Amino acid sequence: MSRAKQRAGIPIDLIQPKRNAKIRQPQNQVNYQEKEQVKPTKSASGWTTAGLAKKSIERRQIVEELSKSGPDHVEIGPPRVLEQLRPRQPAGLAERMIKVSRTINQPENPHLLRVAVVGAANAGKSTLVNAIVGEDISVVSQKAHTTRDRVLAVLTNENHQVVFLDTPGVVPDNRHAKMNRTLVTTSWRTLDEADHVILLVDGSWATSSHEKKADMLLLERLGDMKLPTTLIFNKMDLLGYNDEELSQVSEKYQSLCPSITKILYISALERDGLDAVKKELFDASKPQPWIYPSEQKSDMPDLKRAEELIRVEFFKRLHQYIPYMLKQENVGWTEMEDGTLRIDQNVYVERESQQRIVIGANGAVINRVVSDARAQIAKAFKRPVKLFIQVKTKKR
Image (cartoon, rainbow, N blue to C red):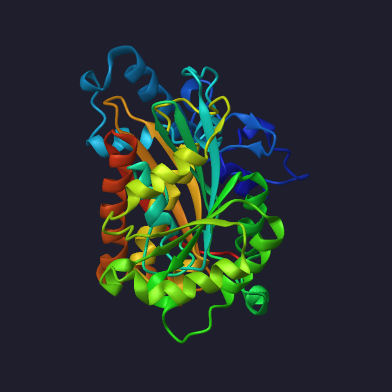
């Protein structure tokens, strides 16, 4: 036991040998009285080794020299050593909390309208909100339920402010057990915050013979709530902008929901018909103080926005259930000296087989995700960004 303590770096005078035990003194034993800089220090967990103490002292000395003379005057090896020495902390409260402005300059006669945008999955709700606001607030992909939470976007024009509440696609009752509870309930809870509703319907789907359970469920609920509703048929470019094909459908929808006050036909992807939507919402706005500054487009936290932009890149490249079960963890949010933002993320999967799929052959998938997500984050934050992603398997 005494020999093991010696190897651990414990000073010889602290070792209590057994009775009649002979302890051999190694030739290369460190003299702790002469070399104080490698003297082991005591912590709550016990004695640290001399080697670890020496390494810690060396790192501390390098950091002190860096703080005094700067990195250009210290010989510590390649630049990567500098990067490893730099402390890395996850995002703080400022990056995790929603953006709240303390001062809002009110115009003369301000008008405000809170609009809930609801509809079936893949109807184009996020595309419509992004097109109207003029900025990519909600992430968009071809997969259903890309939007997982309520997303707020703000449109301000002259003395009118319209606050959009983008919601996940409505899930019919028979599929509730298969879906995330938050995803199922978000659309209905958002209606409690709204003054007006946009019911967005996929025009090409409305003319088909498929069942439209989500639309029927929405019409039934909205009819009971009696909220002023604008019915918008989207993706009219797929129908050649022929709204006559939807005349019977629009009449049926209006009979099921008497609170529908206006019917519009647009193509959000082609940005056709958006001026009519804006005019309808501005006319429906009520005299009320603004709740956001004129320059603010969203209240989404910076970390949430970065994670959403990363997530949508996985949605574009992964298939079936895999992109839906990915979990992210932020482990680094570092402001670099040159103004660059460094983001370190861990992405967790459930099994090693999924990890290989997410990484891709020779890192093809993860490299494209990092490259494209970094460009989108830099565009959103209007600053240079370094993005590092590690794919890990959850520990059970």
